[in-house]
Amino acid sequence: MFAEGDYISHSASGVCRVAGITLMEVPGADRKKEYYILKPVYDRSATVYCPVETGKALKCRRIMTKEQAGALLDEISGLEQLTAQNPKELEERCRAAVQSENSAEWARAIKTLRQERDKRLSTGKRMTVIQERCLKLAEEKLCGELAVSLGMEREKVEELLIEKMAVKV
Image (tube, rainbow, N blue to C red; front, side, top):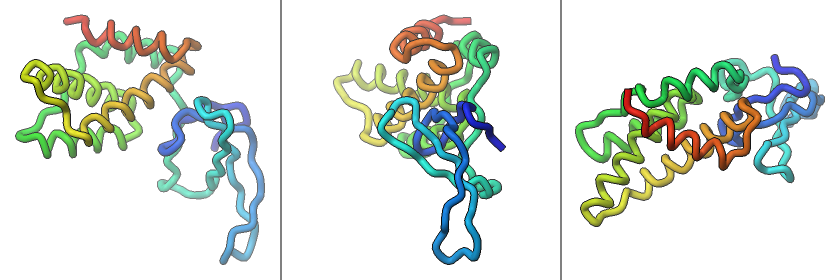
């Protein structure tokens, strides 16, 4: 269970601050249910209500600690890229990585898709729309979470991420 003030990663809304817990009427239920009141960090005007009692269906987790974020950045250049036999399989693997809610998988997808983008650009081609969307979403999720965990501006984290990915081990 999360507490007021916790920062969490929500599958659809990204990094959110838990603003509280409230009871809400649910159509078809015989009693009120508890909901987290979530305030997305990068969409100040939004409020998300997420059921407290959803078991495995709850697509929320605590964000990385500062130490975990630092460790991920230190390991990022050595992370293996996603592999695939064909472009369609690559899209599926990248989509699965982005949906995994695992920050290391997000980083692997970013590395893979940035290399794919560079390879295609060198031949005068563009990435597929699905690849572009996956890259954008993975970067938003990873940079957003790292920024909050490290207490940095998102733009600075993006620069740091690019720098760390370029380092060869």
